[in-house]
Length: 219
Ligand SMILES: *Cc1c(COP(=O)(O)O)cnc(C)c1O
Image 1 (cartoon, rainbow, N blue to C red):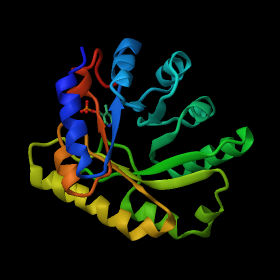
Image 2 (image 1 turned 45 degrees about the vertical axis):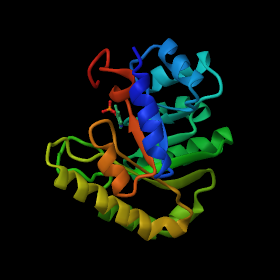
Image 3 (image 1 turned 30 degrees about the vertical axis):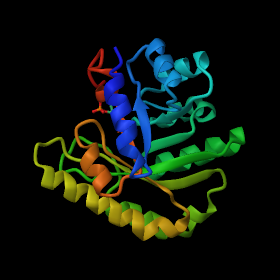
Image 4 (image 1 turned 180 degrees about the horizontal axis):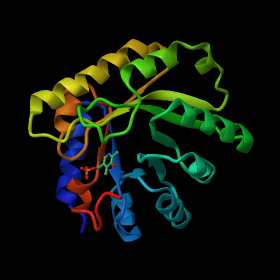
């Protein structure tokens, strides 16, 4: 069951920040997506390649964002159906995307995922890895892949100050590189999107506040 009250409230809250909402529909049925689409939602986020691919075949007029951890061997499948890939967590993956995008002759927008949390389990490049890469000429030579900005997930904690400082660090990186044509800073989920917006996020990824608890756990 969709929580339309939450949805409307979040859409309203976003306006003053000029931020976009990615409705994270992973594990949720087509009917829920259609219902939200009818309310005007156009961007949907998914974590699993096959699930996104299958849903994309059944629905039109959606900007699909891939927000999960992408395996190199799945790049081919996802490229033709996705508008933005949030989770570029290694340069190897970025180069594989470029290779496949050239082959398929499609343009693809990406965000570099930065490991901003103090938790080991989350994916992402370190600040140093990202900076080193962005310094290389190599990055300017990507033909089909556009790095539009950064994505980060804060620590899963009650400590708002920690969350805030993690988001703030990513915002600083974003500002440092925005002259490279970047326009997207993807940070904030159900539990921490308000802090993320205050710290400069312009794209939040919301699942459970809109769609309710997920049918199966993070897999
Ligand atoms: C699942 C997921 C979300 C949404 O999480 P909620 O807490 O349900 O809002 C956001 N971002 C990523 C990367 C996710 O995997």
